[in-house]
Image 1 (cartoon, rainbow, N blue to C red):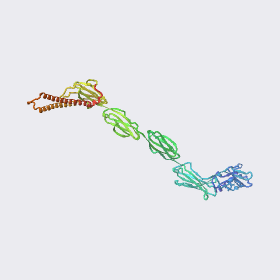
Image 2: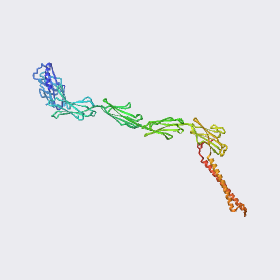
Image 3: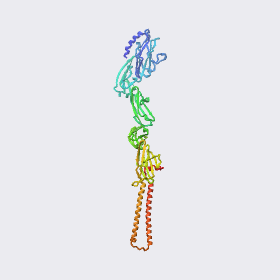
Length: 616
């Protein structure tokens, strides 16, 4: 209030100079509810006016014009005032000293508004000054909060309390500051336009953790029950400090998956899901979810969630693995190669997890099992046995797939051991068998006759048959030829085999046919047995006759010659029957042996392959 004492002499000096209707009072003033307020006021009037009955004053609320009947706050002539101001107002200034300062006690929020002063100098010299004071009655203190609070930057918060009541001086306290890092407090009194404001400033450095937390300012008047509080919530801006996404995961091909991303930042960040350099989805929010339907192996890879709110940027990535059974392997095309060629068979596929690759030939394992997406089977100097189907089998825990190729090996003809000449009943039968690719061509050559027999020559019952890569040729020589010392026919037959890769000629070996040989052996043994049996029988009969009749050369008395002859004849007949029976038995044994040989013949390769094709 000391400022008013300095201001009045200055105002009086100015008034003498201006000599006009003027008033000086604060444009704005504030007070706490249930406290008091002093409105400083100084007025001037023209110097030519001489108040005859003294100077009076009136304070109006809301309106300066009496004809509008504004509420009377204070009137110096009488105590008639508006009922809301009864007993509350008092003029502190001396109107004769041009001091119109007003005191209002026990004010409430309903008293907030404009206050006008009217000077009454008597007669027509009554003037309401248009200037006014705007009174604000507060039920809580003011806190000055910066428009933007940024994390890790120093922050000042100031709490204000009006100090315009001469009987009470306020004090200020900050509340809920225990969690603040190193808070500092400072107090100040600001006077402006004859009003006073007490302030207390809190200084600290906020962190992201302080966002949304409460701070309070408490104003109280000592030795009274008057206390006022105001709470604020800190809005601390900070860059994204964490980006949370799903853990890296595995999904099956064809299924659906949702990728979640949450970003801790203030204000909320612009969240974007990236796949490589491609932005799949974005939104300004605290969390964003990316839906992937019917995933394929092309969806496998690194997904990155990026959060950017203007104060900073942060990202986190995850790996999405798509599991699927092996795709159909890609293998070489079927090929034809020459014997001795070295081959490299490639098999490649894709699968997740990586499949095992197995090479099979005609169902049998070849090579090694490879746990990779590429397998190379190397065949060094392939042989005819390498001819066949090769299959690459790809397997993992989710399924299997395979692809096949055929390798055809071409090679020079090879004579088979079944090739030979055999003595049969009709003569000599010669068979020549060979394998090769292309199928060998077979010719027979008889050097003794200088004759070449092939499929263009129908002599000697030439027969040719091809089964796969095996060719069989056969001729029959009806003449058994000359006999050599061991009794076998003399045969001189050459077999010639050929194809695009070679030619070979060989003399065929002569062999006795097993059935024919067996019959000869058995027949011979049977004949010898019959002869031995006949000799034994004859000797047996003779020996019996000697016992019964004595020595026939001695003198023998035949009592009945006819009866003796009859007995001898009967014995001879019996002997002949036994010999005949033995011969029949040997003959029947030979028949049975031949029949058995016919039913279960010796199965040579030639007869097995040509059993359905009889020579012409």
